[in-house]
Image 1 (cartoon, rainbow, N blue to C red):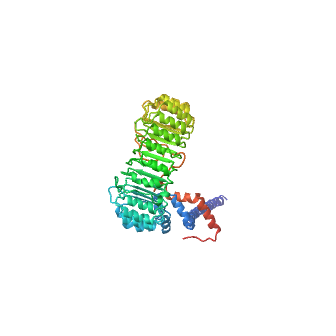
Image 2: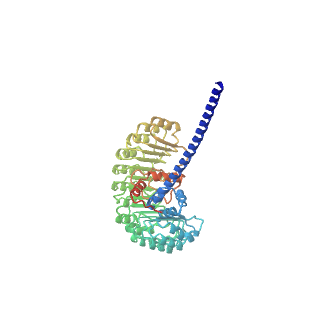
Image 3: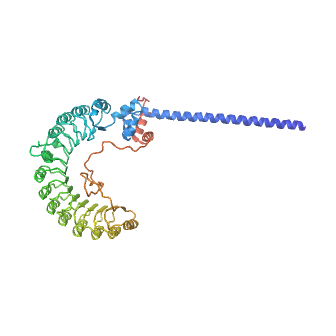
Length: 534
């Protein structure tokens, strides 16, 4: 009996071991199968993603490429021939190093990028640039070009610009700097490009100085021009016929251009009545020119930067007639020709003033109080390099400027007491910049920050601020920056954007899943007969 029981127990134990061994084998087999299935699912999902991209129309894929950085676009173009073709055909902006060795590669470059409408040709000042033949060849490939930027292309002549202008008649914007072609080349553009809207010229070396200079313009482009910007020209007045003939001109910017502009402004304002922006920096203009400018009744933006012959009288004439003025920048250059009298005239007449920048001007509490009381829309105020703006003036601003949002104070005799006044004033104030005001301490700023936590305060006690004004233009020694908060400024977008370094695959997948255009296209393809593109 005992022996049979022992045998039964041994048999039972063996059966149990066999069962456990069989179970472990089954578990291992199931795990292996699950792993294989997971691998297959993953492989199918990858194949599915590949299939999704393959059925995307070229237009959708091009839209995705346009949302990527330049570096990621280049990497995408290496994936396959289709992506290479679509990426090239969808690129509308191109910036090239315009050295002379670019010439042999022009056909291959523009056969790939055959849809370019905005082109920048930039050459190092120490290198030999492309010449007339290369520019003519580029223009033959880019007949739909709308924007051209030329930088330091010193080997271009009038003949090259003529060939370019004849081929690119759709040009809307031309910007050239440090080039050596002259009046004939510029006139060629004005004669053959009837759609030109913006012209920016800086350091054009080919223009003859003096009375022998050939006049520029007006040409057929004068009727469409809306913006003219001239910088650092030895004889900028040779552009007089163009400016006078541009009847639809809205923005005129003159920086460091020699000549007597008092004689030209009466002719300009007599024929050009729609100007809304005038920017003058270091040019020969006086109250005579300002009096002429006062006839621009639609003027909204005026910059007087280091024009020492302009006084209270001229500013008063502008203020009296130009009642739509909303941005006024004055750099008095410590000449003390513009002060309380001119600013009081502005306060009386320019009730729509939104932005006021005073550099090297010495206003007192009298004019500041009138500006604060009358100009109820004043949102941005900068006071730089003034010997008369102290705590009393800042207290007046804090009390009266109800709409003020941004305040910049630089190199003024203001102390912590002025900062204390801001704690309870200017209810809409969001940002204060204090630069090189010796009386203002970090403790005073910290007290203001504590008592008004929502206020952004920037204190700089040492380094000089070097920034341009809100509407662009030349550099200023005592600059102040206000981001545009109203009408869009006239200017050019950059040719190429910088890379953010994000993963291309993540961007591509994110765009595929998030863009409504792609989703709609996929739905449309899903409901169709199933045809796909290779």
